[in-house]
Length: 81
Image (cartoon, rainbow, N blue to C red; front, side):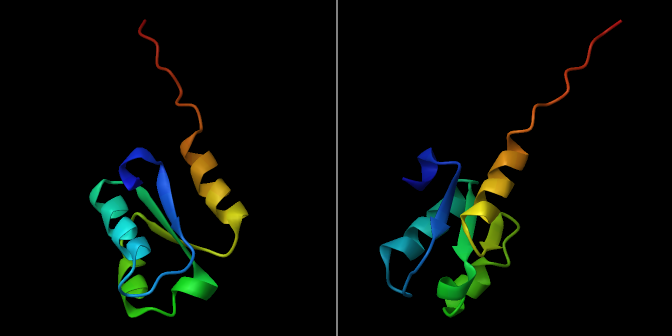
């Protein structure tokens, strides 16, 4: 699933969970990874993953939308001539 998405949002995950596996795969696939601060940052593995450059710790859905919408900004097209 993580390979088909722009990013993965982890809301809650124990150290032996499918959510942890999806977080790892998201990073391996070069995707964005979002952790909900209050719920996930209690886990040691989540704090380690949060240090990765593609990981953003968020507090709500607006934080996720801000990051994703910043990626969707149109690129200025250059013209020759």
